[in-house]
Length: 156
Image 1 (tube, rainbow, N blue to C red):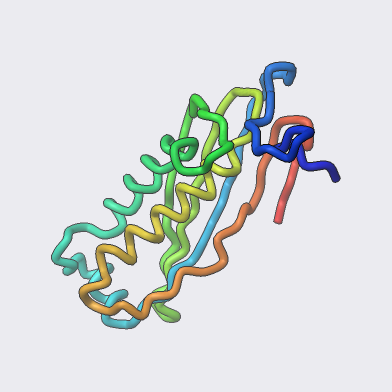
Image 2 (image 1 turned 90 degrees about the vertical axis):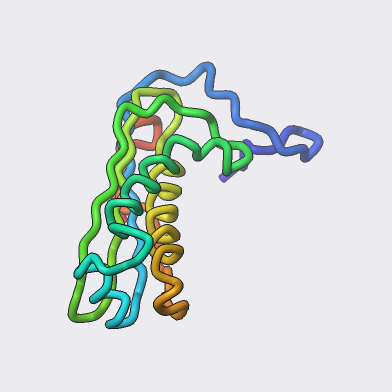
């Protein structure tokens, strides 16, 4: 496999996608945050002083998808047609899974946007709950699936 983020002199470059076809592209990423019983109870009981944690984290994740190219140096700015963040709570094991779905019609994929959205949602949960317990652990952020483009379908 050849890396195309470098020119012939080894300088970092943005990949030229001008010759690629526009296709419908979708990516889904997820990650998990493990929290204490006290944090889980505060989130589900809506007793976190900073506000409704999951609603704020959802908005943060969506906003992050739109700012991905500002954070990742060689990432192309994309015109997203949709971005969504949802959560799955495992109250017994005190874990929250964030799922981010990003969609565009474009010449390059939306994997980085989905990964950034899931990460930002998890970081927001941490930020809003750190006054309760700083021992939260964010883990397993990864691409779940993607479609569109030259490389086609991917499922983890």
